[in-house]
Image 1 (spheres, helix red, strand yellow):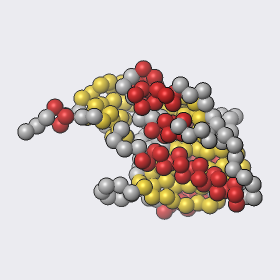
Image 2 (cartoon, helix red, strand yellow):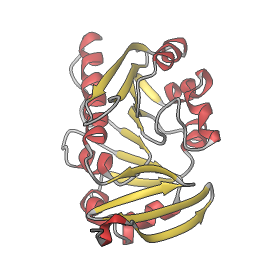
Image 3 (tube, rainbow, N blue to C red):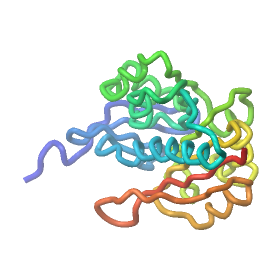
Image 4 (cartoon, rainbow, N blue to C red):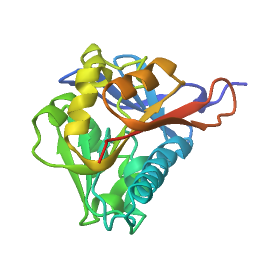
Length: 234
């Protein structure tokens, strides 16, 4: 017998600057769909939490390797607000200093500030360390004069599976050099992906990143999610 939860309920549908974005409820889950492509839901959050934790661990390891202690209150840039797991996890950790989140979809920001996703992010958004910047991440890293100790990027399903064509440039050598430009010496770039990419590891190295490695996140079925990590030379 079917149940009402078999069919997702559309809570909001917007035509944004980069196409259609939809917020759905499917049972107890909230889901974000962009141009018909499933992006993420509120089912788990392990990947997003590991993205933040792996980046901080890599930063501490890079600092130790450089011969000095861990940084106090490092500044993190989170690329993509999504359902808010990464922001909430960073805000729950007193170690972080400033927490900047870049999100290009006004609808997603509104769903967090005054909509159904506020249940996940309200406390984090009230944290004085946190700020949301409405901008395209590709343009932001090219133009900002700000610097960060860590960049946590989760705006696509991975370097080989981008949500929009314009994001491709972020994972190119030129785009990665833009990321390196806004990192402090010894800073860490962490990129979430729905599947491993050996080619992307090589691209990171060719763009000048060191200590490149990939950390896996086990999933119930199929290929594990991963976080690609690289360190800007000191």
